[in-house]
Amino acid sequence: MPRDTGAYHHGDLRAALLTEAAAMIASEGTDSVTMRAIGDRVGVSRAAPYRHFADKTALLVAVAAAGFDRLRARLRSVGAGAPRFSVEEFRQMGAEYVRFALENPAHYRLMYGKEALARKDQPALREAGDALFDQLVSVIQQYQRSGAIKRQDPQAQAYVAWSAVHGLASLLIEGQILDTVDVDELIQQTTRTMMEGMRPRRRPARLAQGR
Image 1 (cartoon, rainbow, N blue to C red):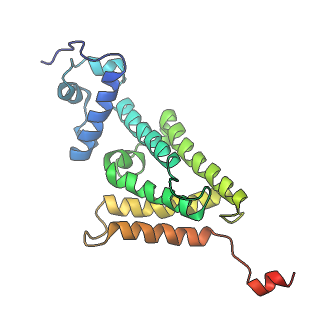
Image 2 (cartoon, rainbow, N blue to C red):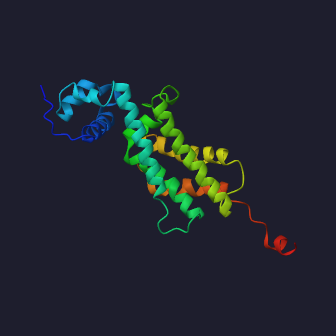
Image 3 (tube, rainbow, N blue to C red):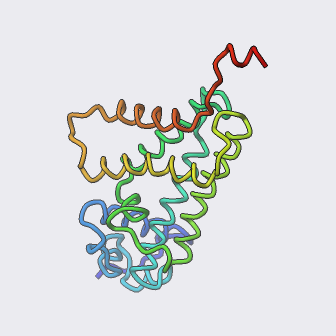
């Protein structure tokens, strides 16, 4: 039986458990994750994981919440090379959302997909998910003030943008879109189409001059 040798410093074991749980979910699904199995795989005593997580559900909630936090951080980092609050910058955020799902399918399935936990029953997970959505609403409000996005209900616009990128991400990670498709081009086309619907309409030049 593996023994807890003290090799993990404070905080390191928790991170290792989260990483291993995500890897197990990616390869075998959530049913493969048990507190006993993950302790064995990380190489600690079977009691050690319980120092950080009360049970399997608590562990899965933490994995999903970490996914939300990572996605928030990734979206905040978008913008290099694009004018601030430009249509292109916002489009890049949508593209990064899809790429995050493709690169982290285990996290994404726990956050939104077929492996997802009921957020209404998990306050910590609901808080992490709400924080990501609130960030999107806040970004849209900033873009509205800059004139890059229509001045409509920002929450409704956030749902529209989210639906577009989430739908594509889900179809891709579940293998519902054929492998022969150029994924990068599909991401570009989806986010461009999304932005075209959110941009304010420009009046014809002759009308603008006649005011």
